[in-house]
Each structure stands twice: as structure tokens, then as C-alpha cells.
Image 1 (spheres, rainbow, N blue to C red):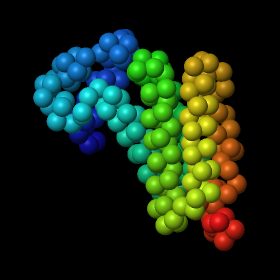
Image 2: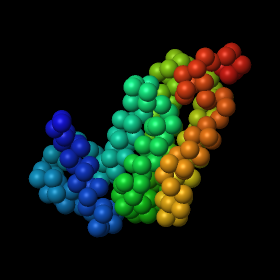
Image 3: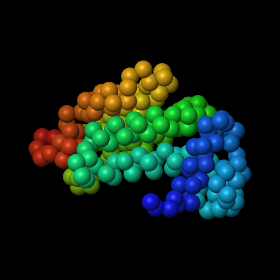
Length: 190
């Protein structure tokens, strides 16, 4: 088992504190003390609390997507693991949605992260992103993030596995060859 980085320790402290306290009320000092560090060490790694909030969400998502293509791990597995991440970090996610300079602050960053991760994934597989595909990826990323947040705010009436299957089924047809690694025909590139 690898040792956690300082950034990971700081993020874990924030996630744990957010289980019992509103994120907008958590101070840098509290976060630093919770992981046995100083405020200076915190600022060596993050600009502010909001930079940390975004990183604490983005890193696990990037890690999940980076596994796609290895050992039979596909895009459906990644979608399910991201939904499971949302579910297992429910208090942190809901707290961030409700208590970070208005609900749209965190939601905007999460949607941007999902789009960027998806775009980077497609670029790594195909080397290029046609303009039409970029728009479809934004629609998909922003739409699925909004739906996932609603799923969480509604108390997740649909099990994670079923919800992830809905999100996978919603992948636009023109995007599927890129995310599933299948041959991309010339019509999809226009």
C-alpha cells in the first residue's frame, strides 16, 4: 500500500470535516490541524479552500478514468465507479454543492472536470477532437453531472448500478467509437 501524498492527506481531512460541518464554515486552520500540518504547508499545495475542494473531487475522477482500457476495465466500469465515488462521498459532495459560494460554484467545476477528463481521454485515444464532437462531449458531461447531482439530492432512489447504466446508455452515438475504442469512421470526424 502506497503512502498518501500531502495533498491527499489534506483532501481527506476536508472530506472528513465536511461530514459534520458546513464547508463554508471550515477554516484552513481546521483542515491543517486535522491532518497534523501547518497552514503554510496547506498553502504550499493549494491556493485556498476552493482550490482544495475542486482537487479533492477531480483527482479521484481522473484516477478512475485513467484505468479505462486496462485489465478489462471499460467506460461503463468508470461511470459506475464515478457514481460510487459520488455515493460514498455523499456528505462531502452535497456539502460542496450547497455551501460553496452558491450551488453553481461546485457544480460548474465538477462539470468542467468531467468535460476535461472526457476530452483528454478522447484525445489520448484518437489524437483529435472534431468541433462537433467537442460540443457533444460538453452536452454529455454537463448533462450527466447535473443528473448525478439531482440523483444525489433526491436521495438516490435508483441504485448506483442502474443509474450508471442510464448514464452509459446516454453516451451520444457519435461519441461511442471514441470512448469504446472502436474504429472511428470519417463521418464521425466531421
